[in-house]
Image 1 (tube, rainbow, N blue to C red):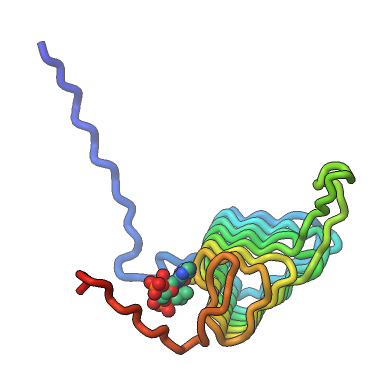
Image 2 (cartoon, rainbow, N blue to C red):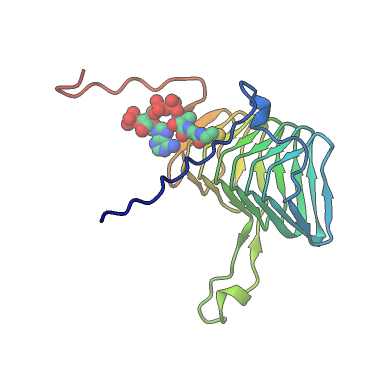
Length: 210
Ligand SMILES: CC(C)(COP(=O)(O)OP(=O)(O)OC[C@H]1O[C@@H](n2cnc3c(N)ncnc32)[C@H](O)[C@@H]1OP(=O)(O)O)[C@@H](O)C(=O)NCCC(=O)NCCS
């Protein structure tokens, strides 16, 4: 005899409030946010911090966030010592790692940091004769990012880099050297491609292309 199991119940759908973008954006600081370390952390009341973000601020470190900063879910901010100065209206996409900028991090107003961007200010010692790299004194360099900069998702900004105002860094770039203001730059290593606002000439269509 063939046995039939009872039909699997349909999973219940979760509905956001109809037509309301407010349904997607959490206001305020989500209760899952973790803050540790004993340093100075300043968020104005206008800050939005989504679920599962962490702020590890060492006792000699400080992080100051300007007005209307949005930090999407899963971001990690960490520093043993040194200051982060984040301007007004800056946004950090999901899963950004902003860590150990012991010589300082400055980000200007209206800058957008895409999902998965990593910014660090530390190079470890790399002398194979001097024991594990982990225990060698690190070389710490500051990172400065201007105003109205857009950093594409999954880019990496290395120690010592400055990025000028109004510049766009393409997705997936590894920024090893400073990039001036007002340009589109991308690639690994990241190179200036053109002034921002100027289109590249169209690539000629190869045979058979429409
Ligand atoms: C840099 C960027 C803004 C340029 O956009 P665009 O001017 O419209 O560029 P196009 O798509 O016309 O591409 C022009 C050329 O650059 C190349 N290119 C564009 N972005 C690139 C990138 N990030 N890395 C490497 N090459 C890139 C394209 O392949 C194309 O080359 P081709 O002419 O040989 O085919 C865009 O490509 C980008 O990286 N956006 C980031 C998106 C993002 O991170 N969004 C998350 C929300 S914050």
